[in-house]
Length: 119
Image 1 (tube, rainbow, N blue to C red):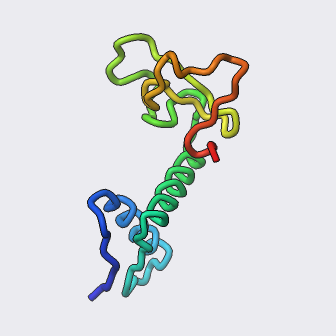
Image 2 (image 1 turned 30 degrees about the horizontal axis):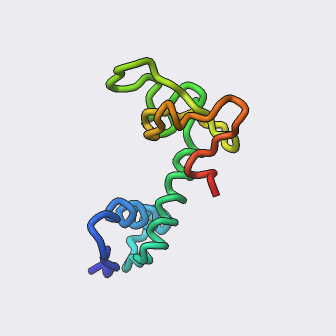
């Protein structure tokens, strides 16, 4: 029997699954006897950000694809895709994917930071 912590909300199941998978891989070929995932809101938020950062850092061809949706073009284009680049990590994003309106788009002289770099 494997013991484990339980999520305390209805939105952190992905975090729990990813953390349990990571623990399983780390202990391979052994099977873990227990899983403990810190389930406070603060810890879950940090785990989500850490996972997103790890995934983004491991991605390839970041200049050709949106770092949010993973596509070169918008899936349901109504207008041509507008792109914005993070000043720090230099990843590109469709403004539509990050819900940035044209009015919110900074001018070329104003640096913009993605959610992972904006601290």
